[in-house]
Amino acid sequence: MSFEMRFRGTDTMSSSHRRRVRLMLWTGSGALLAMALIWGSFFALRQHWVLVALDGLMAALALVVMQRARADRYLSAGLLLIIGLWAVLVVLALFADVPSAAAPRSVHVYLLSLGVVSTLIFRGESVVWRHGLPALCFATYLVMASTQFGMHSLMSLGDEVRVIGGWINNAAAIVLLYAVLVLLQIDFAERDETEQAMQRALREAQFLLFFQPQLQADGRVIGAEALLRWRHPERGWIAPSEFIPQAEANGSIREIGAWVLRQACAQLVNWQTEPLLAPLKLAVNVSAREFRHPDFVSDALATLQSSGAPAGHLTLELTESVLVDKLDDVIATLAALKDRGIGLSLDDFGTGYSSLNYLRRLPLDELKIDQTFVRDVLSDPNDATIVRMVITLGQSLGLQVIAEGVETEAQREFLIDNGCSRFQGYLFSRPLPLAEFEAFVRERNR
Image (cartoon, rainbow, N blue to C red; front, side, top):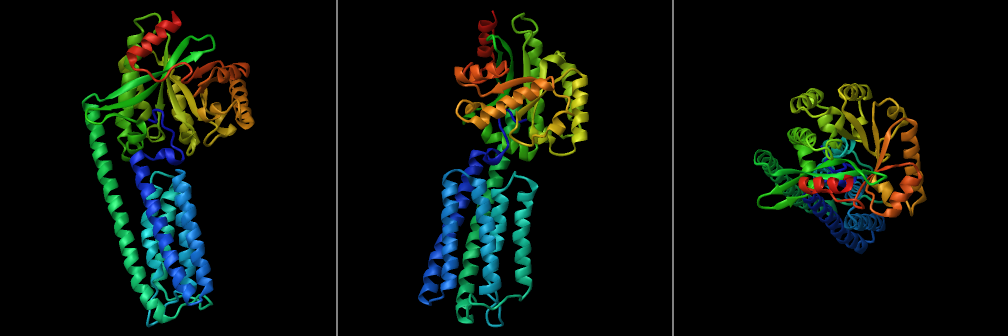
């Protein structure tokens, strides 16, 4: 379950993983810059200007990667580092470090470190990046290490330089590879520790549900989105960005999601005893990994039936990442849920894999306008156009439309003027513990 997390770009990374990626990017780009300056100076003394120019290109690449890492653009920085350095190493291996009997090729050994680095940076991303980049680096290394192919040119170095360079390249590559392996070891240890901690959190009731109110235009509360919080006995409150990505990665998200659904259903049952709370609907986020599990529908329906909760008051929110593959299977799963009366909402519409083709086929009840569009709806004409389009599209398909991330009265008025009458955001309330949420509802709906 996403529970407020959105898995795009750097949002897929926990803060600890971001720190490791940042360190890796700074280490890699720093080492690249240092090597470029050292070898550039060496080749300048020998008046080998072609290689000086190539070293200058490497230095510029390192500086750009550093700048992007400083701006928290980790994935674009990582992609630039991997692809840029791979291209430079291939050129050097083919045209400068041409192997001979006296001096074998050595510059290609950096490809091993580069491949391992890419597995760390792009962990959790799409298959193309997560597996494609390491495969590119390792396959290139295999070809370079197994053949003597090379082309003599103005860049080609003599054996006397390449013998010394071989020692330097091999030593530097070993140091870099060791540093990357240390980071990976730390990463694995922390992930294992976090997984065990999450299992304890389930057993010891450390997880809590907070509720962010959803309101209609007249100010009445019509429901809430259930958001997961973790109150660790030693570390205090742990943000979802710290543990949700790891729960997704190690599979424990299914247990956590099942717990959330049980709690949500139990809460709906409790609210039926009070007239002001009984009409409330409760939205629960479902992650792509959880949704695609073959037992998801049967488990969800069993939880709903055993709890006795009114199915029409439960809404499952799905992000567009769920809809990427096997659309017919997705439609069948949604239909099975809707047949039992469960509401279905498409969260963050327009930020991912939007397609009118799948939208008209899905048995949805609600579209949710992403907060990234709502935030700048008054200052960015493009965002304003997108918001109007989503509202019109939802109305034409007979869907409810709700806007999240509403923070100002001006944003609310814009949405109302354009036909959106349901809202969620800090203008009305932050996510609240249960008792505070119920008090909020009683005050608003009395």
